[in-house]
Image (cartoon, rainbow over all chains, first blue to last red; front, side):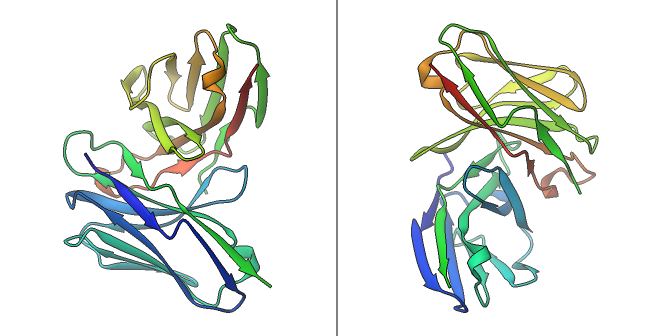
Length: 114
Length: 116
């Protein structure tokens, strides 16, 4: 059974700092990995999707990497801003069996202080 | 941009009531999903629909049913609401695409449901 872990559970940084969020998964047989952002009381916003054949994806100040063999992904946020404060979730889509579903981590709560 | 719209942001119902949560997407996506999100438990899949009138149970289907009569609309039904169904409910959709593995899921803003 696929399990997804995100460390740390919470992170507080000063504005302008570069930071890395971590995601690990137990089964490397995946189609893709997706990073989401969730603001308090809201739904999820898709940030980046990395296919299993890719090593990284970039969007603006965000860069996500994927090391499928070791079961790890990182989300790098450059020059953090208070508006980046949110919960960040990663989710993997397995390639066998129930391959329609995403398995989510519990998220990292990021606070960027002005 | 993909738009997934959930009919209510907040809903308060009583124990034993039949509750309908509605979700509409505007991108002609084949796949639609219902999740619930609870503190400490994360997101859990309730039901999935891969096309009109087609559905599959997710991880926690007990106490719920779904309806997909039209491609753009996916309804979650609480047959007899109970207090342990108080939660945030999230709907999502995804394009099946020509390479099924590579389409992102898009989420609505969620419905915070309280059962009293």
